[in-house]
Each structure stands twice: as structure tokens, then as C-alpha cells.
Length: 189
Image (tube, rainbow, N blue to C red; front, side, top):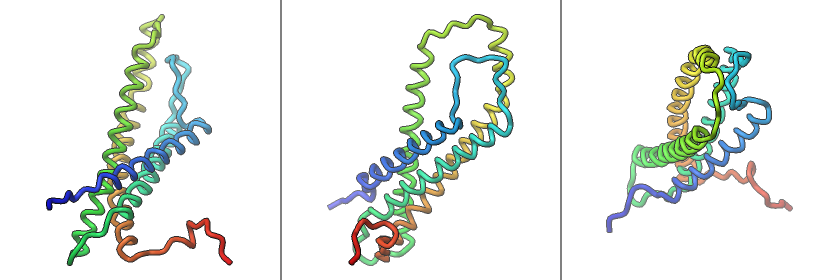
């Protein structure tokens, strides 16, 4: 009997949790203006370093928290290994499950973003002044490059966080850690 080392059910469950947390946090960010996007470029739109930093910190928080929760769930829900297994092997497999949660959710977000960007590009948006658009694009170029680099770096960090959270979830699974004092809806008598 050749059993797969990857339990895709736990990976998908962690991915769903990570995507749901990302969605909720992005909605909160939109409510306070951290995700403002306008359809028209104009010369009076200023991108300040503080604004880029604020959005960057928010993106970092969203990615870290969703990766942490999704990775932990995947590690905690993965079935324990049979037989005499080293702690290193168990941590390795738990970590891989967390990394797969991060990778799967990242691919879903990139795919959805690409689809939305393609749809937006197809929208009829007439440009009246090509020179004005070019000036605004040059003005925003540096901020865009810095933000893109920061988003990629935070994405890599969130992959490491997903790995670490999954190994911690696996350790909690193996030690049968009881979290009911933190997360319980039972009425104590």
C-alpha cells in the first residue's frame, strides 16, 4: 500500500482559512482607506512614502496572519504518523503542509488578481491626454517598484511563517495540547 505523504484535505482546509482571513482583513483595510484604487490617473494623485509604508505594513499583517492561521490548521489537522518516527520527520511533513497552504493560497490570489486585471484592461477607459498619463506613470513608478518588492518580500516571509506555524500545530497535535480554555463554546457548570 503506497500512501501519499501529502494530505490534500488539510492543505485545502488551511488554504480556505487563509483566504477567508485575507478577505476579511482586506475588507477592514478597505474600510479605513488602505486599499484605495482609482480608475483614472491624474496629476493631483500623490503617493506619499507614508502611504506606501502604511499599505506595506497592512499587506505584511494580512499575509502573516492568514499564513499563520492556515499553516497552523494544516499542521494541527494532519494525521499523526504511524510507527517510530523522529520529531524531525514529523516537523518536516507538518512544515511542508504549511508551505503548501501558503503556496496554494498565493496561487489562488495571483490567479484571481490576474483575472480581475484582465477584465479591467478590457473595460473601455478612453485616455484623453497621453502626456498627462505618462507624467503620472513616471511619478508613481518608484513607489510601485518599492511596493512590489516589499509585497514579494512579505510573501516570502509569510511562507516561512506558514511553515513554522504548521510545525507548531503538529507539535500541539502530537502533545495533545488542549486549547479549550481559549476556544470553547461549552458551558461550564
